[in-house]
Image 1 (tube, protein in one colour):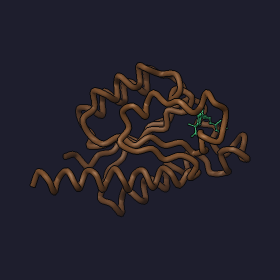
Image 2 (tube, helix red, strand yellow):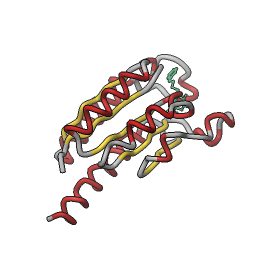
Image 3 (tube, protein in one colour):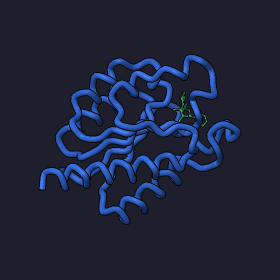
Image 4 (cartoon, helix red, strand yellow):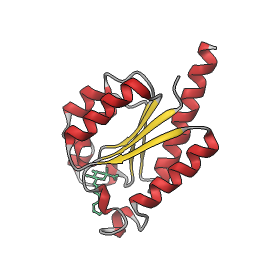
Amino acid sequence: MSRLVYVLNGPNLNLLGKRQPHIYGHTTLADVEAECRALAGELGLEIRFHQSNREYELIDWIHEARETAGGIVINPAAFTHTSVAILDALNTFDGPVIEVHISNVHKREEFRHHSFVSLRADGVMAGCGTQGYSLALRRVGWLIDEKARQDG
Ligand code: CA2
């Protein structure tokens, strides 16, 4: 299985570390990308890290991942709670998918308690701050290795 992992981020996450630090902390998305790249190096993974405010771009990256990647880490942001289209795209991807939320969505408004993406995700990180990305990447790496062990 490919050791390439897509790390995808949905709408408004470009503002991470710049607004609402009481909810999302002070770490920027560029910091998160740097942490993911450093960890990927340790784990022998390659990553493609993207953020978009447009649903179709996230869907296009998931389609790209179908052809090239072994796993996906995704924080769909508000699309988590609204997007059947992102769920449908993820359902066409064969490898491990881990859903990440920086905040604990279950401690927040009721509309954040439901996730379409969780119907596909193999695991969900919520409320671990931006560390959730590293934890998710470790898990995807472990699942890729496990699949290789089973196939080998
Ligand atoms: O906790 C998360 O990671 C969320 O996916 C973040 C989404 C929210 O709609 C989900 O319910 C939970 C919001 C992302 C907005 O990101 C911002 C970051 C900093 C400042 C403003 C927005």
